[in-house]
Length: 94
Image 1 (spheres, one colour):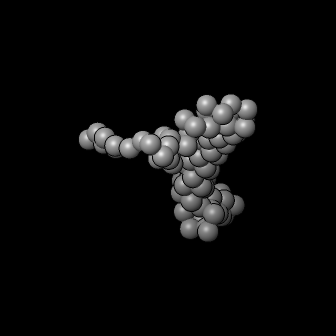
Image 2: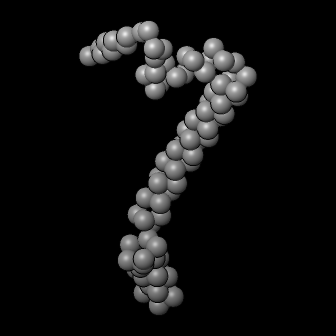
């Protein structure tokens, strides 16, 4: 009986309708909020990955600038460059 009397109160009923509207029908509803949070976490992980890649590239650039042997290694491995008297054979693994 007390529960029924609580739901007959117009303020409680209006509050329940308002919360229901905000959770399910508003353009910033609960489901979109959860989706945005998951997307934000994915973007944070991507940001960290790209920061790590930038750090690795900066280290490689520093090594290339200071060490001519490293420059030759990078040129041979990444850009398939060779000396005039050499032949390059590519072996691809499956």
